[in-house]
Image 1 (cartoon, rainbow, N blue to C red):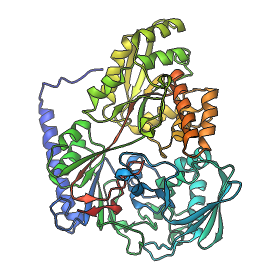
Image 2 (image 1 turned 135 degrees about the horizontal axis):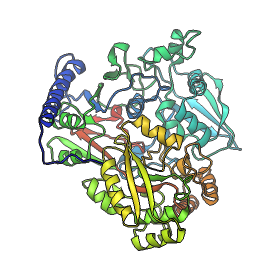
Image 3 (image 1 turned 90 degrees about the vertical axis):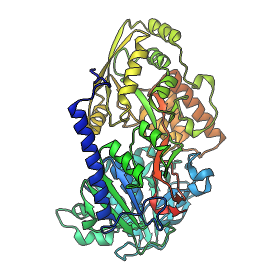
Image 4 (image 1 turned 30 degrees about the vertical axis):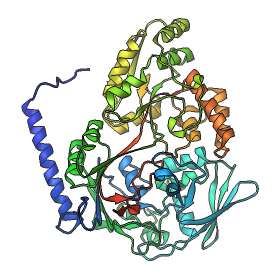
Amino acid sequence: MTRIPQYRTTWATLRGRRATRAAVVVVAASLGLTACGGSTPSSGAGSGAQSTFTYALTGLPTSLDPADYQGDPSRNIGFELGSSLFRWGTEKLPNQGCDTLANVDQLEGELAESHERSDNGKVITVKLRAAKSAAGNELTANDVKWTFDRLIALEVSTPNTLMQDVADYATDPIKVVDDKTFEIHLNSATAMDLAVLTWQAFRILDSTEVKKHVTDADPWGKKYLVDNSATFGPWTQTPGDFAAGDRLTLKANPNYSGERGDVKTLVFLSVPDASSRAQLVSTGNATYATGLQYEQYDQLKDTPGVDVQTCASADRIPLVLNAKDPNLGKPDVRKAISMAIDRESIVKAVYRGFNKPAKYGISQAYGGTHSESGTYQHDVDKAKQLLAGAGVGKLSITMAISPSRPGPEAEQIAILLKSQLAEIGIDVKIQTVASATEINTIYHDGNFQALLYLEPPAVADPYYSVFLYNSSFSKLNTYGYANAELDDLARQIGVMSPGAERDSLVSRAAEVMVENPPFIYIVDRDFVHAVREGFTNYQHAPNGEMFVYTLKQG
């Protein structure tokens, strides 16, 4: 790869810097106009009433429809819209979930008031609490039924994977009992049955309102939901509040009866340039920004008025080796590559004091105890011996990377991996692809030798992490890895609640994943948030979202 020398300042560079400064000025001006009717938004720590929270994103989706997932911005907005049946009970955890991930037994009802499981575990009866949409329609079990039927009929990828593969929902899972009661029907009971419903795409829609806009050609109201949120959550908006791909303004749902904080208006703004997002936070023109580079987080730590929070996360960066390759499919080759990786030096070189080197086959954020055989070792000599014993000779592999997944640090990690693997005689060629869509397509098609990726669990649980990419019976295992013992462990972990017995199985799964690696994990990422000071009551859910509606002044 050709790298641009850092010591040269060209006219193009100067023009880029001027463009960035101009973008910040334009964005700051637009914030003042769109968020508060022409006045500057009250997002700084010293303002008297911090009623507006401005959230700078890498981009905005072109649709608000939960069936139209367009990456992280859809997720960020979807979680803020709320209207979920269940949520993570972070308020009961130390530091409200920042230090310790909530587990699948630590759920609370959101729209659900109570639930009860049948004796055989295959039916969960849920009673709804009283709730109204912004349109004034009362929440009923028919809204729940219609929302699930819609996700299934439209074959929406992630929620259907969560229902069918992570949990084991029946084909027609929702049965209405009465206006405020419904049943979830399962083929078999698992530990994940309710936890999957915390995912943002399961937000319950106001079917009474949406059905006013359906047609024979559009029976699920897709056209209406492009620019109408239609939920029972803490926020509402009108089509005029949404400029597709550019801006979204949410206002408090006047009919929302749940607990909420002090923010009355939430503005999402598309700011593609990371340095512009960081500057908006540093100057107080934005309250929060997603997806900053680590040097920017490091600089913001010393910026007056900015709080940089670092919280536990199950997100991981793995190296994926295609097991269908005749050489990379050999367990000893995979283990040799894992042992050649100096994870600690990668984290020190790339992350400015953030994140952790992966230590175990399972994320260290899950806690538990791990044996030496379940702990990654850096041993170049042993790696060379394993390669020699595998009889593969000199290897040359092509590794696909993308700045969109895992992030802009991908190139730095790739260069370090290339150097480290060269020590055991493996030549790495780096292939850079630009877009998130392209890197995801390469992975999902299994069209790669090696690939640097990101594993961000939709549900932060050891079962999810063992099963989703690493079991042979998962649809997302596109790289051909199969291990009968790991498959058996995954099935057992999936039906057990957290506790000592489950922890023991998780520890054994970590050992298998080190001894015979599926994904080779390199980095355990933290959730890092750069946010303006002046707010409290953060709820640190294990999905890493901000949940602005809970924030209080002070």
